[in-house]
Image 1 (cartoon, rainbow, N blue to C red):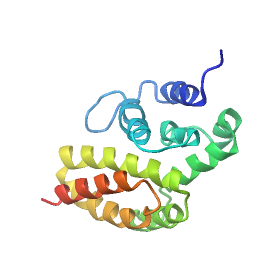
Image 2 (spheres, rainbow, N blue to C red):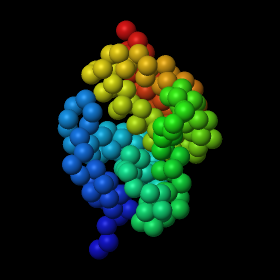
Image 3 (tube, rainbow, N blue to C red):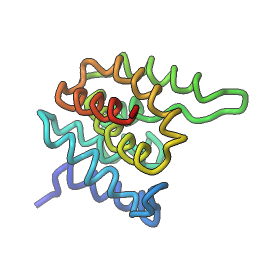
Length: 166
């Protein structure tokens, strides 16, 4: 019996993240897509194509994602991928481009992004207060463009941001 697309995505992500650890916690990086992002997405109405939650941080080419999972998932992963730093660009400009791209994204992509923001916000606010002061306003701006995402996750992301301000 063939593995489901979600199980294939989980295995693909585990292999892609092998040996990587999270910045603040030093736990295996796979915990982020597995126990946080994919689990949050699974807790709300979702589609099978939202398995992009597993793949949103993998350091492989979009061509590899497309070959393994098809064009729809590759497009979702592309929409979820942060603009990379480039010489002469600043963080504010990159984040503005990310917001513009995500504002046009489908509800599934926006839901996955909300789940990602929830987990990243929890970690940033808990372990790095100085970065949290930079991260928080960025996330509040992002919440404004993710209106098509799942309402429960949007509320959760806003609540975490509100608590992060104290």
